[in-house]
Structures are given as structure tokens and as C-alpha cells.
Length: 502
Image 1 (cartoon, helix red, strand yellow):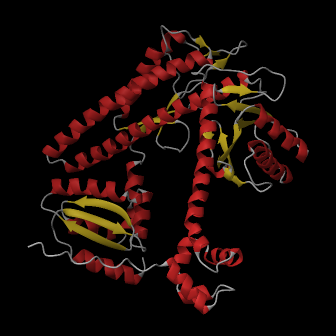
Image 2: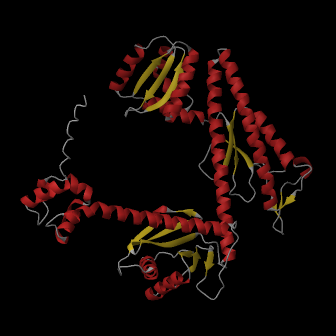
């Protein structure tokens, strides 16, 4: 510990009162890294800095904490129970690094179920990893937890972490060698799908057990606090906080799994309905937007595994013509998109969706022919009856309104429509703001373009002074003053004083 830091901390510790309170340890950047409570602030905090203490501490995390303490702050309270409550609030507010480490320490067990495995198992662990696995716990009573898992194995016919199932020639699995001892009353040879049904039921059971244990732990914590056993109450509070967090994460996990299953079903439905070689993991959809032939723009949205991937969205201003021609606009933007992908050697999407019918489809195919690129699977979605249009001889297809594949296509198309309309509205709004320049005498197209290019838009142009305006080529002092006056008309004259009615 550097000498200056050591002296500063020792002086602060000597000045601490022999009273209850909460202490906040900080690193050299002033960040709170640990929050603790104490019956006596002086005794508790001074114990961290006793000579030779770091060499005798068994837990490496506490040794690491002491090494990075650069400053401390304390808050006095009236009683130890008040310190316990304040400590909990501050930990929740600041989420200090070392409090989190201690909460997740190896004192408590977790149950891990890895759904990425063909046969998910209920295994015990003390470390939570950020994976697709689901966790239950932590559990303070390891003996009760182990007995509960043994009960679950018999009740639901599931595998625990130490099991070694054997694959059978027909693709099914033999779960245990001695079925009578392990899962009496259940079939021992099962398919992966049947086994997952058991896992779902066991997870629901364990989830209910977790909530039941949470209420028990809360009662135990209250009893410990009333008995003035504050160390025990604080330990239980940490377990309750971690268990409550796990239950919240489990709810998010289940929601995400539900969405994933829905997306998987939708992609599988599209593969079947459209006769694709594989589920369309990458889909792109095009839409054209304009107002009576003006402000013609296009959008392209990209979905990956059934979900929007906004970093791959694109928007286009039509460059090849002026006017209202959806077919020519579609041909242009499809050609620009896939010429760019082909030139960079990037993969094509699995499915291209065109918002429209046969005319728009023909325009898209024409674009691929013009750029010399083999088109991927491509369909149109005609909105009137949500009819799927193919570019080949296949008849139009109408899926059930509840078909998950159709619902995914609708989400894709509606997102492209929203994105195109948003871009169109942005351009119209910009044009309306800039139209104020059209009425300024002596401001022709060249100087108007120079002003907008220099300031980047009408808002910054309005904020410019006459001196700023003179910095634009072609804008003299006299015209700058006239332009500034036009952009900042004088306020209307104040209304006349009302006549005395008396």
C-alpha cells in the first residue's frame, strides 16, 4: 500500500466513532467497490488495515479488495438493524463489484439446466456463466437441495449431472443402467423430444420450489433480525436477493425461449410453404414510398432468425428518374442493393420479399438480370389478400391467417413499410423547412444550395449571424443582412391598449 494512501486511511480510521453504521470502500477513481455494515465502525473498518492482515486472510477476494481500497466513507446510524437495512439499499443502488462477488461466492449452490444439450441435465454448480442455460437458486441449504433433486429424478424421470445415458441404435436414449433405483415408474428408453417434456415439467416444479424457498428464507431473515442475529440476517438477505434475481432472469429466459420457439416454427413453416432448401434465416424486404409521385424513396429491412437486425437496414432515394413509377423504383433499388453485395463478395439473403404483386416481382428479377447475379429465393406479398406471389410458374399461395410463416412475412413487410414511410416523412419535413428560402428575392438555386451545404440544414442557417452568412461563397454583406432579416421577421407590433370601458 503506498505510504500516502496508508497515512490518509489510518487517519480516517482513527477518527471513526465506536457507533453503528455503514462504510463505503472506494478505489483510486472514487468508485464505490464495497459496502459493509458494522456494529462499531471503528472496530470493523480498522480490522481491514491491521498490520499483516492481508497475509493471513484466507479468501483471495478479500485480499484483492484490501489491495485496491484508496478511500472510504462512513454513514452513522442509530442502531445495527438500521445499518443492515441501509447496507442493503446502498448495495442495490451502487451494485459494488466486490459485494456482487461475495454474493455469488462458493457458499451457495445453483442448479444448472443446459437446453443446448440434446438431453438437458440438472447439475449442481457454484458459478453462473452467461450462457443459454437456465439457473435455479442459489440455495443456502445444500442437503435439502440434493434431496430435492433426487426426488425430482424419481418423480419426473430426469437426468442429474452425474448420469451417463447411452444412445440406442434407433436414436433413442437409455437414461440409467438401473431404472428401478433411479427413475422407478418411468420409461428408461426415450426419445429426446419425450425427455424434454419431462425436463419442462421438472423445471416448473423446481421453479415453484424456488418461490416456496424464497418465502421461507424471508421468514428466516425476519426471525434472525428480531433475534438480533444480524450477521445471519445479512447472510440470508444476500441469498434472498440472489434468488429473487434468478427468478426474474428465469422469467426472461422463458419469454426468450417462447419467442425463439415461435420464430423457429415460423421459419420452418416458410421453408415448407415456399419449398426452400432450408429455413430462411436471413430475409430482406423492399418497399417503395411516395406522395403522389413526389419524394419517392425505398426501404430495405433485414431479419435474422425471424428478428429485426436494424444495423442491416438500408434506405434509398431514387436517382434514375423523376416521377411516379413503382416498378422502375423497385428495379433500381434491388439492383443497387445486390450489385453492392456481389461486388464485396458478401452472401445473398436466403429469401427476398417484395412488397407488391407480379409487376414488382418482374422489376426485381429484371434488376438481377441486369447486374448478372443469380437471384436468391424471391417472392412478392400482395397486401389485399396477403397473397404470396412466385416469380416462376407456381400458382399464387394464400396461407392461413394464423400460419406463423405468414405472420412473420407480415411483420417483415410492415417493418419495411414503416421504415420507408419514416424516411419519406423526414424528407418532406426537411423540404418544408427549406421552402422558406424559395420566397427570398435574389436567392437563386446556386446560392441556396451553397447555403444549405455550408450550414447543413435550415435550422443551423436560421441560427447564423450576418457575419456567418458572409462566409458562404457568393453571399455579400448587404445580401447577408437582407437574408438574416428575412429569416428573422420582426415581431408583430404590440396590441393597442384596451379602451377604458367605464
